[in-house]
Amino acid sequence: MKIILDNVIKTFDTFRAVHGVSLEIGSGELVALLGPSGSGKTTILRMVAGLEYADGGAIYFGDEDATEIPVRQRGVGFVFQHYALFPHMTVGENVAFGMKVSKVRRAKPEIDARVEELLRLVKLDGLGNRFPTQISGGQRQRVALARALAVDPKVLLLDEPFGALDANVRRDLRRWLREIHDELGITTLFVTHDQEEALDLADRVVILDQGRIVQQGTPEDVCRRPDSAFVMKFLGDTNRLPGTASGGRAVIAGASFDAQGVADGPVELLARPGDLGWQTDGGGIPAQVTRVIDRPEGRRVLARTEGGEVVELDVAADTKIAANDRGFIQVLRCNVFAA
Ligand SMILES: Nc1ncnc2c1ncn2[C@@H]1O[C@H](COP(=O)(O)OP(=O)(O)OP(=O)(O)O)[C@@H](O)[C@H]1O
Image (cartoon, rainbow, N blue to C red; front, side):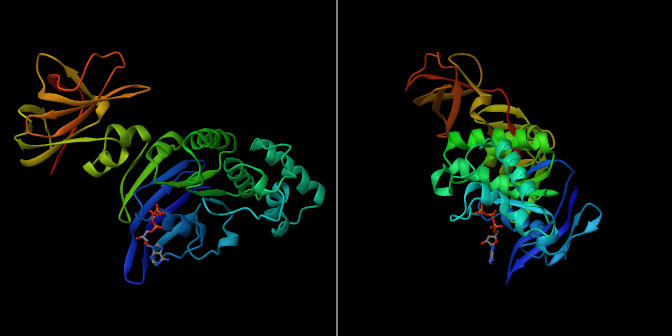
């Protein structure tokens, strides 16, 4: 089921939380809404769900205008971070709940078989008789997904479903969710403020800031071709060096960089730590190492330029480098934006 948001607006009292958002989610696509706290992600999701009404624009499910269709008739399944399971019901009863209250009447053996099938799908077979307090947080969210899937939703809406879990469990669950999505192909909208989660999971990432879409594209598009300094900074560790552009070149910390299409005037060069190198002679931006931090994947070097800017760069784990070393920062890849 394709979903289209056409110039959707939402205002709470006098505060406009969503400013004319237009977005198309293809049938079977998994799209992540990514943005900082307060950027409007949940509000957009709730409007798609029918839990909140848009006060401008329209939302289509397929070719049908769903703007006024009530929540129960939209055929959506939800999993929310705090959408708790019913504590007095077993895992199996929780999964069965939606089917029991659904307009579509199902006989008990059919419901039981479906619960078994769903518990197998979410890899919780055998746990149907436990109560929510007798399983882990990650397992609870898998039950919540099974419960959402039980009524064969046309659309799946997930709001920070793994937000309360620790990093390793989150990673496992998102890989697992992706597999389930690939198997079932349900159109899915996933809200998160975690860049890694969005990039890891989604076919397409929609980045929001202050109620507006600032960029959308595949994970590769948004990572490799950020449209703005905001997107680049939001997506991951970024170094910022100020400079000046003139005639398509930018001079930054004494070195010259391509700045095609950037207006003459103050600019900022943004580069990821992994897109910078270090060399002890030759060209680059002169700098002195202030600190070296060892990490499992390599060494993070903090170096101060002559202009006093601290730059972070990643080098291989076996690189010989220490505080106070002098050398040059090589810029292997960067983006220059008007400041
Ligand atoms: N019911 C409401 N009444 C008034 N303001 C609201 C209401 N719901 C949301 N807002 C405001 O709308 C803006 C967007 O909120 P929303 O929850 O959609 O953001 P979000 O991107 O999901 O944030 P978070 O990641 O913190 O959940 C925020 O400034 C919020 O305070």
